[in-house]
Length: 401
Image (cartoon, rainbow, N blue to C red; front, side, top):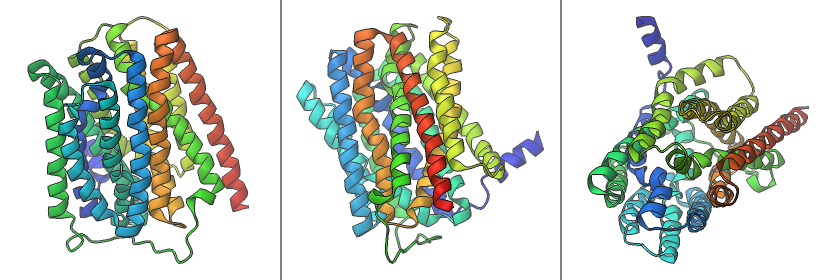
């Protein structure tokens, strides 16, 4: 047991102090984003919107994310990652508190658009900061630590969120989101100010390649859009499936989603360290992750047994544990030959675009055809993504030839 513990601790060694601080800031921020997993429930149960209305609102969620990510990437290359991260966190806190007062369909569409525009300008800046604060050999593990912070926050967030809803209602979630974002901004100001933080790997490219002219990266972009589309069903249609088909309460849904984050907290870093040591191609590992995520949907149609929800969540969790860190590391690695903000923005935009279409299409399919058809369709779409990643492997091999 002691050896197992020591091996686990060793997977964290060698990471810079700045990466640890960035992880703590991310944890505080993501612990507060407990509105997001309950958003579809809040909109249908508290504001009495139809599934079609919720689908369109989630599209504005994604549209704001796309615009914000693009702006964040541009600003990161122009004024630097630190200023972008600080302003994004501070303003997001204010906007989250204000969002609870939007109760009409058009008001909520506008509100969620601006919240996500400001919030997701943080993402490309954070990825560039992460790259700058990490030694080249530690980048995948640094990404994994950030994800660990995100998922630990997400494991705490939904569980606490379920208790807050039960105790004081949904408005408590908006206040918690806002306050934690502001706290994260002040911590960033305190510990990662440019005068205090040490850059480990500053990349300056004399003649940068545009991410928009990188064929292999566009193929990767399409595959990541598909992965995001499939993965995001767990944050819109899946909570409704849990409630409407398996009759879980908000608290039980929070615990089930919290299991995802807790499992990642325990096992992702050792898993990534082990996979890194196998020297497998990053793209092959991303392909495996997407395939496991596809399986997490198809198993739901095999039985009505409630335990299948845990098996599905477990498959999805292992899939995302593999796909996210290695896709992020692939993007960081590719970005070294161009404008880092532009590359990381394009990587983030692939998921932002998923937000536009995933929630809306998922809601429309559930409303029109039911959950079983939706899970079959989602599985097929994920397998298309697997084929695209296999094609990317060939393109990369030709680049090296």
